[in-house]
Image (cartoon, rainbow, N blue to C red; front, side, top):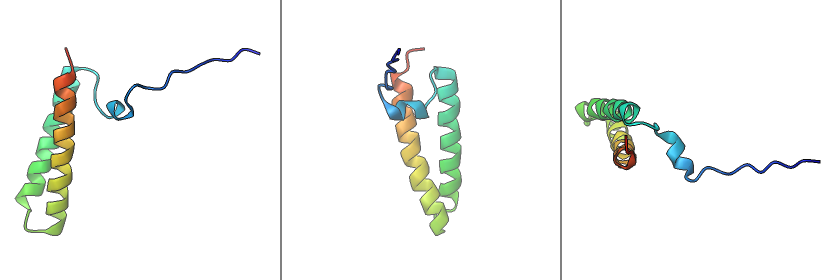
Length: 70
């Protein structure tokens, strides 16, 4: 019987971001657009939720983008 050993990913959250800078920049710009839409309707509770969640996602994606080399 042969057993195979699979290595777990180093960072499970790293799977939520692109592996190259071009795709990472696209994801980051999409997050900025979604956050901007939430900020336009900041007077509505749904706009507040979208703005806060979009901001958190943008900050996370920005930190991931900075770690990419090329």
